[in-house]
Length: 276
Image 1 (cartoon, rainbow, N blue to C red):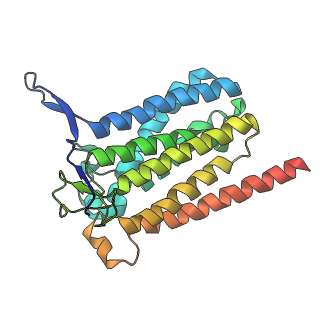
Image 2 (image 1 turned 180 degrees about the horizontal axis):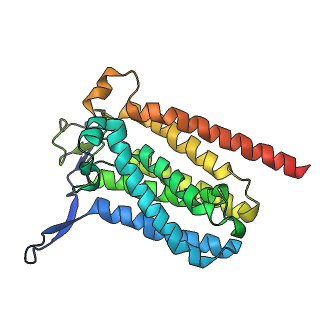
Image 3 (image 1 turned 60 degrees about the vertical axis):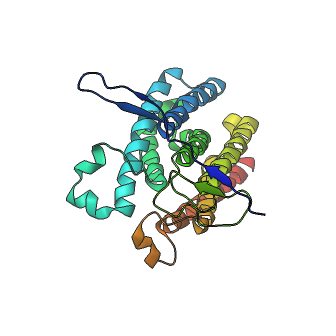
């Protein structure tokens, strides 16, 4: 008996009609979920700042750093890793709409850069890079879940053909054959939701006593180990990846996992030293 899910969801929620020379403006699920990640994340960070006695007036600044660094990093990362010829020949495409193409590895690099800049001027309040990063990964995990669900609503980043009973037929995707496939976007979304609750549990247990770098390490190891594995179930995003033993997502995930192991090791080492 053949069993699969027919996925024929429109990526657009509704369209704002044209007003004069402007529009029409489609409102898409992906954009809504992307924005929701920042809005919900801001509320989580307000809760964290209150519990740990950090200045709430810094929240708006932190949010701005995160929005800009995430979008810029994801956009530049896409062209740098997947379409470098466009980045160097026509760099205006990076900043001009439509903004199709965001790389999660680029977003992480952007976020790290943004947090380094943000924390540089807030050491007096105890907001060192690792303090902020350890708490921010809680938000990033949740945002990652929202964004990957947005990919599902867009019927993009589809998986390879499969006969598992939970496979999806992506009717809206005309790039690949419309046959049952792994819903790789949903796998990653669920994984990020699970990680969000794990990180929230760790922080809620230790709060200010959380070993520096522990949650960053757990985030990197969890996200990019699973990303490496899930890539085996996905169609390649660019044609050039067919020539590689590992695709670009897997190649970029390896150093990220190693970095996560390093952070976990350092956090355990610091905890043992403090306990003596």
